[in-house]
Structure formats: C-alpha cells, structure tokens
Length: 190
Image (cartoon, one colour):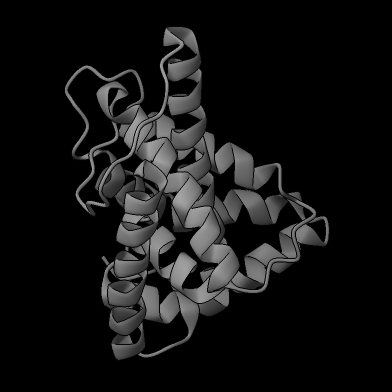
C-alpha cells in the first residue's frame, strides 16, 4: 500500500497545527489505512488472544499523535515517522507494565527482526528498545531505519521515502544497524 498523497497530508497537518480542527477530521481517513497497515505489520506475529490488537494499537497511536498538536509537523514523512515511534513506545510501555506485574528481570537476547511482540517476549522487546535508544544516539538515521522498518513495518522503499534517502542507503543503514544491535545485545548479556 503506497503512502497517502504527500501534499494533501502536509497541508492538513499544518492547518491542524494552526488551529483548524476540521483539518484533523479530514486527515484521519487519509492516514488511518496506513497507520493500520503499520500496526498490523507489527502485530501480525502476536500470539492469538493477546490483549492489544491491531485496531487498539492504531487508536492508541492516533490518540498520542492527536495530543501532539504542538509538534511542528513538517510533512507526511514526519507524521509517519512519529507514528512508528508512538507505536514503539506503546508496545514498550505495555511490556514494561507486564514485567512490573510479574517482577521479572530482563535478560540478554539476540536481535531478530522477526521478534514477536507478546508477553513471553517482553524482556527481548525491552532489551531491543534500550539498544535501539543507544543506536539512535550514535547514529540517528540508522535508529530511524530500524524504528520505521521494525516497529513501523515499512518497506525499504517506504522507509527511503520517509527519510528522503535512496533505497540503497536504507539497505546499507539496515544492515549496519542490525550488526550494531547484535553486538550491543550480545555485549549487554555479558
């Protein structure tokens, strides 16, 4: 599914930020399908019956984005990048809450881009989140590539479009970032 039309979304985001509440109503149907696709990509590995379903993840992310009215929306790419970040944070917050209830500890894991997001995998998700935060501090674009592809479920071409780089740059960053994460997670476990 291609990303929605850039100029219209960008104009609506800016109008909404300027105080036009009607812009938000016109924006929702344009972005909902893509948000749902991003959430579905993240949740498709979820175990059946998990408390957080795709629709709930989309709605929670959308609510967080709506609450971010003060954001200086740059364009459609900025919106979808923040949507991927919001979904990441929702999943990480849920994992932390479940682990706090269990009072279990985190343990070392290997980076696996197919890592399922389920209660049984909460420690892995939290370890990945911590490593990704470290990667983002060292190389922000590589961190964004992982966030968009892994948490956002975007393809190489969609990630390239969002970041304004070539697909080859995305693939190079993806490979380097995965290696960095593998080393960081291995080192954290030692």
